[in-house]
Length: 352
Image (cartoon, rainbow, N blue to C red):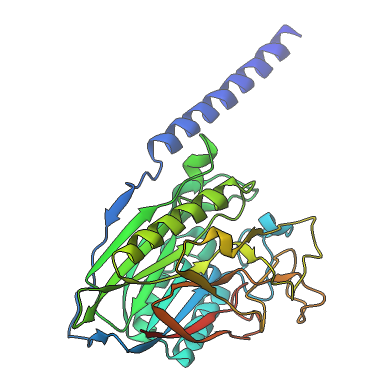
């Protein structure tokens, strides 16, 4: 009996030691970006042309789901069971399909979210480089999720390098990573997302103004306080730029539905449920540019059924624009959730 107890004690001590070592390792290696980081601009080969007041442009926002959340997939955080696709070929096929959708939209700017550059879950493809090459566009990229090893679930997620990518047909004058509030505490924080805004700026020819672009992906799997704090910070930043006389367009994945938009009601309340955002959350001089012609996201509790009645869907992607930007068109593209769990939003605007 004493020998058995001794063995059990040794095993427990080894397990406790392993946990302590792991927690120490992820704490030391935790991704800790500064509140504001200046990002490297592309090495432009040529002058891509000027953007002028009165000029029009097209922007697409697209959560690419790290090219691993196509119509056949589910995800453990949404009530499914999978962590990653069964093979790299599926990720490669999804990347090709996403790039084709983007090319057909023929946008001047692309706001992309969940773009992996070195993650186990997407078989270590550098997706940012792939999209830049496929669209023949320069881009600015920043991490919002970077961890050497994410230990959950079983099998674990493993290494993650993922972030936001803004592709442009214009020359950016400046690009910044602006940290958003993180709702998680230690030790969960060490291997979790560090949300941010990817801010880029384009000078408006003939004026002292800039077009300020904010690409974002707000909190998803929190109890709600994260989304609220991040929305408040986004609103504050937009208000600050508007006060300078700049044009402002913010867009991405809100992980929130828009108050009053009830085309796709929440029928499945057992799994993931988005927050709600309203016009009262926006500063004066701003409005949403969103559409409900088709949903922009589906719940990943199982493969896509092929219709909106049997799969829980939402509108959680879109834009916010300042009132010196005229919205000519906002439309969600119906791509059947073929290559990712989101559908892109296209915005046509004119700078007043």
